[in-house]
Image (tube, rainbow, N blue to C red; front, top):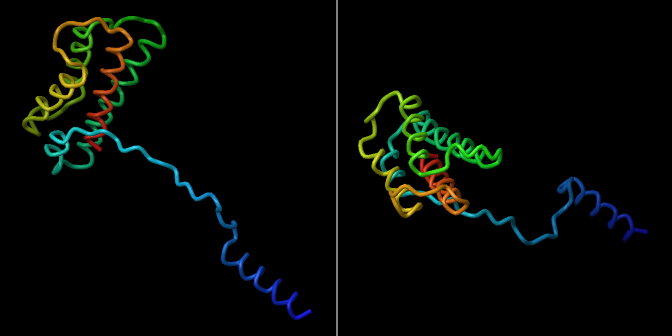
Length: 144
């Protein structure tokens, strides 16, 4: 009888210590590292959280627009030239203090050049579309 009382006492203490039980699953969820551009990270290292958030939100928003153009089969952004116009006009309206972070514009262009692979006018086919989305993602991640 004493052993039974002791066993229930241990189980009771265990239930108080671990009210949700214990996980026997030893594998942890693997979080893939986000790709960033070190030049952009460096240029924004002293930026305010608001400025970093603004850059990230601009490129997150542009990714959504680019994705919707394809999803809805609108085909409005069908060349990299039209993409460049969209990006330029977006930045003209979204950025209040041009030149606040010298070199940021060049670093952003360098990301697009590196990821897309060319500054020639290209059709936005599925491969180029994915590259443009990836470049936007890298820039947004770098600003976070």
